[in-house]
Length: 594
Image 1 (cartoon, rainbow, N blue to C red):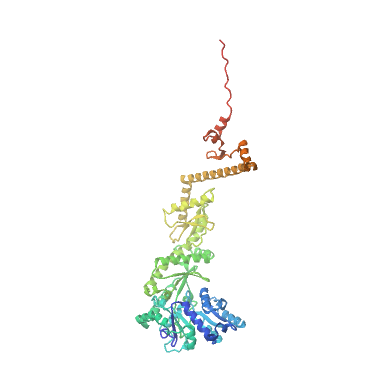
Image 2 (image 1 turned 180 degrees about the horizontal axis):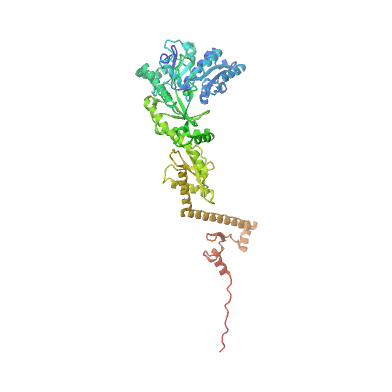
């Protein structure tokens, strides 16, 4: 392993968990920094507490795990912030070192990145090596760019260990070689004392280590040194081909190590391959006149300039994130063979990442797959650019229709949303009408879908479009279908049913209030609750029960149920009043006397 990765004389430790190897390396660093740690234990840290420094790309769970394994408080872990180039800020590290030294702490370990997982950028190894040598700090590195050590242009095999700028490194060979089940390999310098190595648990001559090395030994016997290096070289050739293809696309921005402005910062000319890209990170951006260059023919230069000015104001980071999210989803669906990951970086937003060294599937990819990825990307970019251009025309056409209003949608990369607003309608009616409108439009085109704005109201959602789409005709289709649905008998009947339901609801509420009021007026006295006296009082003064209420749907009037109990049938109020009136005597005619 030391010969394959151009580190002659390095010692090897095999393990199944990446955190286990780092914990043992940190314990080894503590033994080197505190020689009396073997005999005194934690008492060795009472006078000078050790401090561990981590790059910002490492998760907090790993820092807590290391502190718990070493028996140190979490306050011993320091996070070194990144600079504007997403690499470790050396000036910030110097300030942390000076502050810790003033407080009596002892810097012990620095964990740096040899190619960040999402950008592939090296931390400034030359400056970090000088600081570590000055303060006697153990320098540990991790990252996919370490795989370039096994390439032919790397450090010669006969180079001495002094040419390697770090003290230890962890290599995930299972991911790099495309062979599952291989253990992690930790390489560290052989200048450490054997007693310290055994105390830290890095002794390779153990039963556990012999079992762990069996899968790796079988893989190396099958692949050979040249075969293992060829697999790594194949991954770097894929990223190099993809970078060449993406540099030809104007609306694609390369980030990280593949960016034209930033090249991989290798720790030394004799250590890694210059120009090797362990990962390719890119995103869609609007390039102004360059992106508008593929607009339909016939558009004037003034129109394109006006379009660029308007889109420059509209292109927020949130909308660009929506566009890149849609692009990543479409690429993964149309080309599942090529593993692409969606990332959200703090400074750049949502990006697409291709990292063949971290995916065993990349071992079976070819240059033709990169060409297919480039072709599929161009097709999706054509739709993206057309949608961005049509968005302005869509917003402008909505101002000509009084019954259509624009609805802004979150996490949506399409044209946007449009809501049909009928005359004198409530919010519930508008939501129901737009839901029916979407169901009707789906019979015409499946591109229509139901969406909801920020206020929760329903709307017609429009997706991605091309340049040959007539936006005015599209809005006319929505407007015509909305008017037809509004004037239909079904909509009128549903409005009548909703009006009737409101009347019934109000009647029930009025009846409930009247019953509550009547119950309050007819409260029982205290005499009815006295034994014996209450029974006699109830016989003498019969309690009048509270009558219920009926609701007349035709008239919308709440009436008492007294007439129902009286006549044993439901009668109208007018009929009851007529029957309750005393009948007038019939006029009698005088009888003739015989």
